[in-house]
Length: 312
Length: 310
Image (tube, rainbow over all chains, first blue to last red; front, side, top):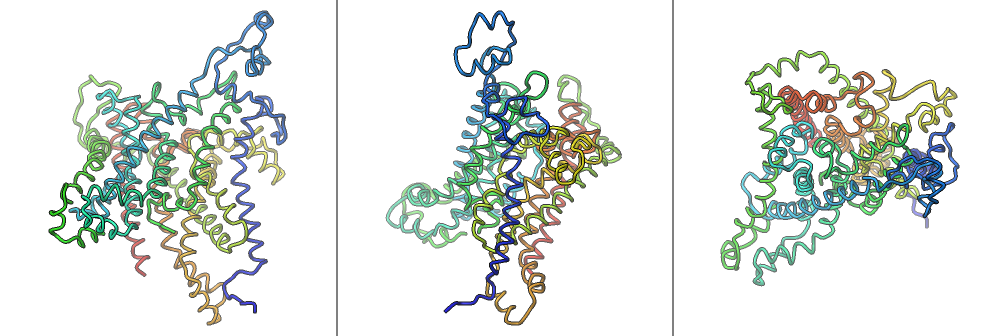
């Protein structure tokens, strides 16, 4: 017998909903696909009118992204034939490769500062979240609200004194300074998220461990930590994505040694104007890891972006 | 919350070896609080102190004078500041309007549970997690009048000439160019929260309404909307705070121009603090902004709690 549900939408309704949502998803995707495609265009193709949907893929953008080039005379080019495939791409423009660009360094800075600050904020956040979850702490609610409220400040508002403070401590434009700064910014997220995850672990497990003669600290790292791995991992990914994307502090407080990729990518300039294939190539390499993580995080996404306020 | 500490017999804590719970609690919480005090609160206090002076960070050796409330006075009577406030309000109101409208509609459609909705949802959420600076910079390319994809697509759909308008160079269109990109990025955020709200409504309520022969329209307004409202308001709170602070996307997209049509408060503040180096003045500006966000947010949270209680 077929059960008739009163609330189940009809097939036609589902079909219409599917088409509308699918259409919106494709519009959303279009700019991202355009970044991907532009990275594989030649500079002529990238600025063609009308915009080219079909084109012959080229690695010119990626080569320009990773190298610096100088113009050479025809005699020089004839006397020194290109040695490898990337040299050949550059030669077509009458240029030779002078050396590596700064993109690699900037990308590594993003990696170092991203992972460093993620490790620190998750480490400190786990400890604090455990304490807030399990112990009686005076003014607990006020402290938690204080931690959250630090996120409400516009970064530019505290950037002035941080700029002065870092200058006098010798931390401006250093990895250590940026790691500390991003750790502080991410702590509110990591404490709130992790407190939610730890609240969900029944305290009975630790009580049993305590009765078995574990110290509180042993119970924490032998019983609670293994249970909280998923929560810790997804919190870590959120912190990493935030530090990875951060721009305001990076552009104000770093210029040379510790500059991350977001302030650097928009400054990639080719000969005569912005080199869009190179910018797109840089953006692709920078954005793809985040997209992969976003898809991996699907289940915890909502929780992460609302600081644990909404849990599906 | 305190179940563990409460359920543990009082003498057990003393019987077990190692540190007492109270000591562990402090050891665990202290580093976090210390770091936040050093990197958030200390700078904030410093900002407040600087806001009463004429200090300039690019001239550290000049003498600093205490000028009382002069900076505040100058900001609140400056007509340029009111223009940036208007630009910010325009940006806030329209981004929230479009994101709520589209986000709710999408969530409502996705809740029909059609086949493949997981795949589409995963695609829709992508922009929200990306770097606003990098994406914003690329959008300037999409907005180019001749070669840009956006103008081309609009021209294709409406039959106008793609070179006849420039989104980011035009005084009338520039404020909308940032609204469009922000909506593209953050609609999924509102959508996800609304979806959680919709999924929290038990089917049994609709079944009961169906038995009472309430029309679908009536069900929507008397069941769906009121039950999703607290979620929606939470989404608006988050978007409001975030967009009030908006900096990276707009700096990369329009840089505040043309003129100062898209110069939102954070962009304006950055110019005062790090280009004109009027540190004292900028500090007062920062304090005013912070008080505004904090004040508006607390009023809003009160309203939100009232809706939740209903």
